[in-house]
Image 1 (cartoon, rainbow, N blue to C red):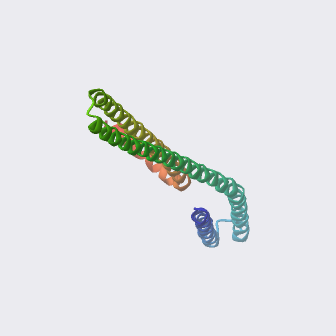
Image 2 (tube, rainbow, N blue to C red):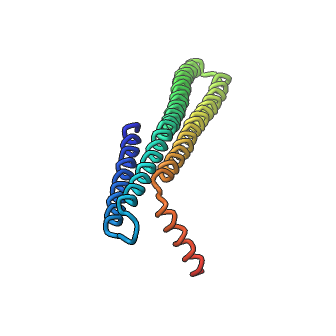
Image 3 (cartoon, one colour):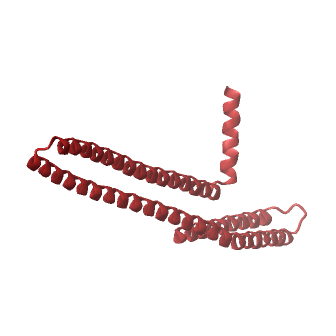
Length: 199
């Protein structure tokens, strides 16, 4: 991601340098072609000073703003990674609980099988009744364990989705802020005014 950010900043500086060069060439052509009483050398010199001043200011702004921008995006990336790791830990915890509940269910199934064997051997109504109660209790425990595990997994998934969506929107807004130009803003304002007039 840092490489992509550096590439965007480099392309911005390259674009600015190209625009400055075009402006300088246009100014030189304008100054050399027009001789209405002013010395073209003075006009060209003034124009070049202005271009140099613009390049220095733009370069200084780029230098000053590049580091905080990289730092801010790096912090956001670290926060997103931390959030994803927390969600992953929550998912692993939920899976561990599911495994524990499944182990308990397996134990209860074994105990139920043993109780059934004892009930068949003794052929006792009391034991059969106790077995039915144990079966009902085991069914209840099984149902509650499955519901609890499903709730934990769903909660972890929702948290992960919500955090991922929020970070994606934040990063998209940041990228849009960096890439939108004054020309784009002017075009959007014009289009909105035209839509308001049409309505």
